[in-house]
Image (cartoon, rainbow over all chains, first blue to last red; front, side, top):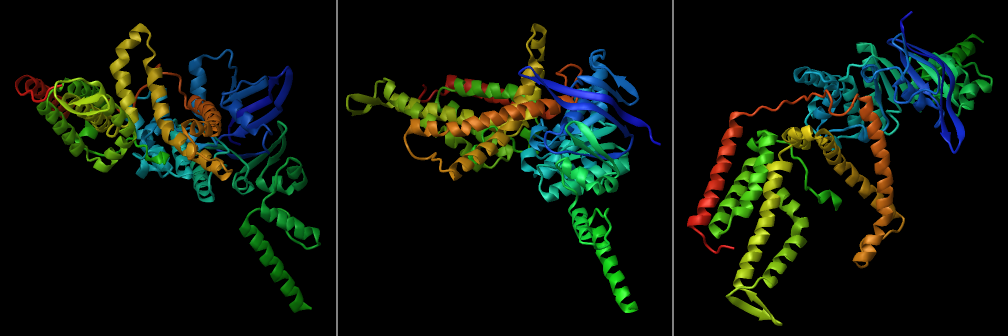
Length: 293
Length: 273
């Protein structure tokens, strides 16, 4: 059992609007283990981005407790230095790549984070080169961000976070504004970070096809966790997933529709290749039956 | 249309001008401006022009790019020239149009003024904006002005604002074009009508642009906070500036040029203004 690095107990967040208290997150209990790859799903306004901002200490919870790296976080008691030390360990990549790049040259943007940490220049140089290598953007180090595609910009944004050397990276719908190719690139980068560098990844997304690549899927609806488990477990609870305003992966949906008509297909197929395998197995099985009879 | 604006756009490269210390370049740009206003006669002007041509040649920036950046200045140039032609008295009348006499001195002055503006634009953009990455430039400003921090001038904050403004110029231009196209698709007309009508037709472009800029600003602020930005306190930089031999040599060269202009003003004044 790996060490728990993020733990929330009855975590709540609400804001006031015209005297009404509007809850966004309600009594949320969650544990995330070191080195895991967690996908968070939820429709717009379900509170998933708020959860990310609470973990990143951008927002202060209105109730409950949050523990990071085994220590309870109390923002009121905490010094500024301690707050930034924690924030450095939890990086965040946002939806719009344009709105997170600060500098006009790629490498200078990647250097922005380490510069804020007050790291010596030679070390910053090394971190920047390493980070650009990891995301495969070293060749574009001297380019200007507006010359890059959306996917490339987002990879630069990720490099800017990697250069901070965080333990956890939260991707807040980081693939939502990208074309399919850009999305594939980002997902490959995310998996690489998780597998090769042991970075804990929290990937907030709309895309079911991305969620099935995570080790664990959490479905959030109205500020509460409604499902939590492996992708297979979560997506076999079709009704709950649909009630949360989400879709199940296309292949799963197809298999379930076929099952409804009385055919024996697996209910937990997630990927296209699993779907293809199921169809192949079915065809072979029926052919064998015919030959026997 | 908007993409043609190249003013304030950095061209990455490796020329001597690119490699000069941005602080030196900033100071020399000021010296260059002084140089332009110091020049009095044709000979001194010729030296400034020569110097500017030298800068352009050394920078390896395509001449076409520089000429293109001067295009928006055309109206300013024409107005300045006209004002100088008609408002300046003189002793040698050239011709008279409806009670207004144009003097030779006025024409010379107009030409000199136009030349001044062109040199001012071309020289400073080659010396600074084209060959210095905006970050290096703001960095230089920050470092040159850092003594002012002692009297509570927010030097770092000012430099950061400049950087962000520069970073978002292309993004906002792109967005403006997108909004304009969207409005055009809905039947908006930006081209016809008089100036007032044209300006009015831009309101539906400016409002969405403003709203989205505010949203961008907020998102950027959050992203910066996530990257541990907390103002200039305790911040280091990846690139450390050191003056090198070529910085001193170039400064020396500029000093000689200034001396040359002063000497030409004194000893070879031709058609002075």
